[in-house]
Amino acid sequence: MANRLLVQKKDSSNKLYSLHAPETYCIAKGKAAKPYEFGCKVSLVLTHKQGLALSSGIA
Image (cartoon, rainbow, N blue to C red; front, side, top):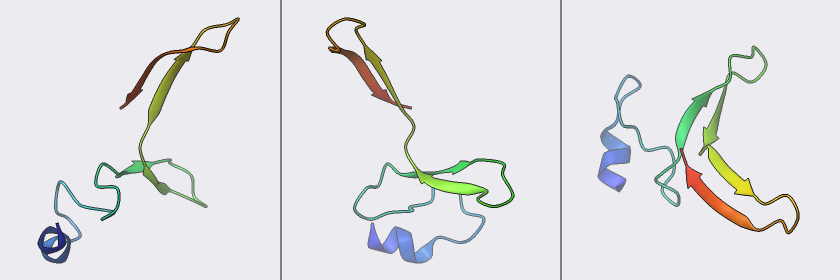
């Protein structure tokens, strides 16, 4: 992973943004003040009454 981080260029695909969380990727927000953020999109499904988590996933 360290070698991949050192050899990547600005226009490389499949970039490594974080060593401690390699699943992190760049999310374009489209705003002038903060155009990008880094992380993972997560979806979560909860029950209405008990608040029980039925499903979760990283997109």
